Length: 59
Image (cartoon, rainbow, N blue to C red; front, side, top):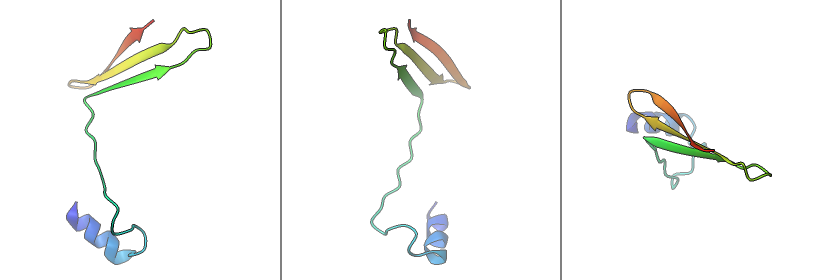
């Protein structure tokens, strides 16, 4: 990662501000919530096991 950052800054020094920070997330679980005007909201959870599995939480 550091080598790539160094090459990018050398090629285009004004592309990214030097004080910016890069964060990486490695999600093991993600939940999505979709609102419904009639309050029949949908909740889905995705879990990373060997592959992503989907689970309906509500309704």
